[in-house]
Image (cartoon, rainbow, N blue to C red; front, side):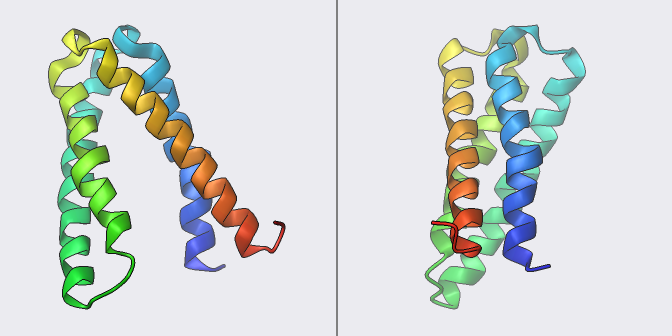
Amino acid sequence: MDVHVVINLFHILIVAPFLIWVGVSRGQLPDGVFSVLVGLGLFVTLYHAYKAYTRLVAKSGYAWVNLIHALWIGPLLFYIGANKKETPRAAFELLLLTGFAALGYHMYELAAHYDIL
């Protein structure tokens, strides 16, 4: 299976639903989820910062994808995880919007890959 299809399915089936669930649940999340968010935020930020750097050095046109993850998604996950139940509602709303955006974008990319559109 094409790696892009796997990435799209991963975001459609796992990432987007998780982000939407966290965004909707807000302060009602189990305490352990906040620790997961801190770790996930650190991982996403560091991994995608490295990938963005390598793509920028290689003059790839896809560095923007990694920059969005390193500068927006990872830090937002970390922020929510670090602030736990004291996180402002706006941060949860931004994560919710990000989840819906990820779902729509990856569904579109998957449809385009299979020439459905």
